[in-house]
Length: 365
Image (cartoon, rainbow, N blue to C red):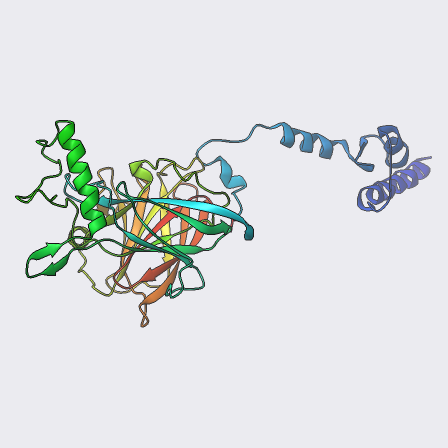
C-alpha cells in the first residue's frame, strides 16, 4: 500500500511539473481540473495549472501599493526610453549663473547660444538644432524625439572688446535694459543688487564676462516632452560659472587651474527627482594627477573629505583630462553610500576648457 502511494505521489509530481511547463495547450478551465490532474494546491490561471502559492504571490505583488519613498524605485529602476523618431518631444532648459557674488548668483543668462547635438557627433559639427536663451534664461528644442541620445553644447554670451570698451551682444543688452526698466517702475532701482545703468542709460550687465563654455548631458534620454512654457525653479536649472569662480573652487580643494582640463559637475537625484543625500561617485576614465573628486557641503562649497553628497546632492570631478583630441568620455557610477545600491551608470562627454553638467536620476542600465 505504501509502495502504491509512493508511485502515485511520484506520478502526480511529474504530471504537476508537466502541467506547469507545457504551456502550448489548454490545461484547465477551472481549479477542479488542476486538482484532478496535478493534486491539491494547484489552481487554474490563464488555462495553465500553477501552484496556488505562485498565484497568491502574483496577486500580492499586483495589489501592493507602489513604493514612492525616495529610494523605492531602486528595486525596479526606470528603463531607458526606446528610440522612437516618430514621437517628437520638447526639451526645455534654463541657464543661470553660479557665482560666489550674491548679486550675480542665480541671474538668468540671456543670449546663451545652444546647440543640440547627437551623441554620435561628439564635435557637434552638424547640430540637430540651435537655440538662444531668452531674457529669463529659457530655451526650447523641438527637433528631438523620444529616446534621443545626445547633449547640448553651451556657449555663454561674452562682450567684445574694442577701442570704445566692451560691448555685449544686443540680446543680452536688451534683456537687461528691460529688466532695469521693470525694476525702476517697481521702485527697486535703488536696491543693492538691482540692474544699474551708466551715464548713457545703458545697463551695466550684472553677469560675469568670463562664463565657461559647457556641455549639458541629456541623461536619461527623454521619454516624454516637456511643457514648452513650464517654469524651471532655480535649483533645477543649469548653473554656469565663471573662470574666476572655477579658479576659486579649485583653490578650495588645493588643485591648480588646468586650462586644458574638463570639469564634471553632477547632481544626484532620488526616485522623486529631488537632490539626493548620501550618494557617492566613482569615475572611470580621464583621471590625471591634478584631478579631484569633491562633494559640496550644506553651504555649497566643495569638500574633498566628505565622501558622499549632502542634502544639496552636488558632486563632481575637477581637472579631468579629455585626452589628446580635447574630447573624451568618462563613465560615472552613482551608488548609495550606506547600502552600496547602485543608482545608475552614466556616460559623460568631457571637453577641454568646458564644464560638463550631468543630472543623475535612478536609471536601469
